[in-house]
Image (cartoon, rainbow, N blue to C red; front, side, top):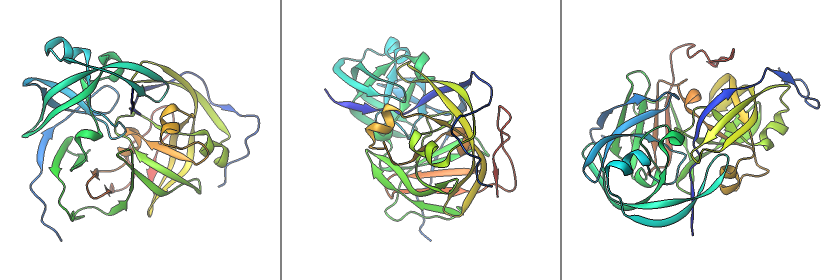
Length: 316
């Protein structure tokens, strides 16, 4: 039986006031690209983005674009309308749990004018996923995905061999691991940290190795639920700065936990941060180019995006 990494966290809830921790110290002060196909997107209620897809010619269903998940997933809502044959079982590694789930055979998945044929997908509950399904890395590897927060649209295009950076102020080269793109030169409060861009998670989550190095003073408890329906209760606090290749943001909300997903990626003692949708919304646009292993950022003009729960994030 094989394992599938689905690192999405469905939602975060505040369940405790800010509190001091006992042992923390004070924080230190020119290629022409093919024309993109634009797909209208809807925000789900956890601030993530969904796109319409068809499964075996039936639909449309609203699928979440999840750059933190290895596999494309269907839910019980899809299965109730499409007779999908069983394909055995697999272990799903989520942000809070490892669980054995059933697999089903999908003959075709239609996304705009593109069709993906003949693959197996985990079958999960829609209440745990927050959408009708997940469009994972197995469906995105040859594409560039552009999320445009200004127009609330998503562009999906076959990535050219040498992609243009026209219109983007920051282009970050990334390494690939288990299909995910990893930014290895980020700094959180001055600590070198690997960053994973995770469009399937509402908030940003880091491991305890990062928290120990930056020694956060104040934290509040939050509760998260992963795609298996398992709950995770963990401390959340605000990092003073997040720096990625010349960009710097302040007061970034981060939840800290040593999750099964981080362990599956090999991050135990090395700081790692999964950058969720709340953080990504600080940009006007984000393009994730899997073929060329690049992540491109279009910076906003001035301050924006007031954070919930009393925090905020700004661009310096």
